[in-house]
Image 1 (tube, rainbow, N blue to C red):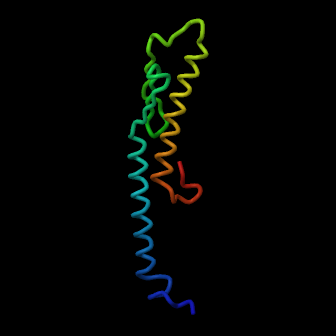
Image 2 (cartoon, rainbow, N blue to C red):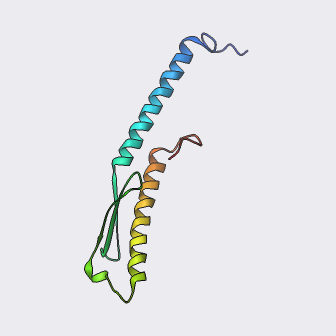
Image 3 (cartoon, rainbow, N blue to C red):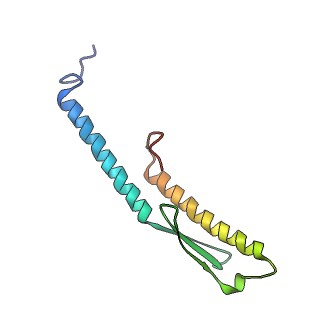
Length: 109
């Protein structure tokens, strides 16, 4: 009843399973590296603030147009910067979810 596997639980079937698992791990590592090296960008406030972040959530650049800097309203600039950075982080999350959808719990990023 349990002997429907050729060679039982060992032998060639186990080696094939191990090869498949190793191949899957290599593919996941390659995809993870690709995402980590990708730069995600966001522009807010009509292009007044632009942010770029890599797939490791490291901020690569922030560009702020001088005309958005208002000494009387620093909160507005702060909000624009936060919005641009958060938008980049959302793009990284989305890329990881789309490219790594079937990772078992504990193997995510």
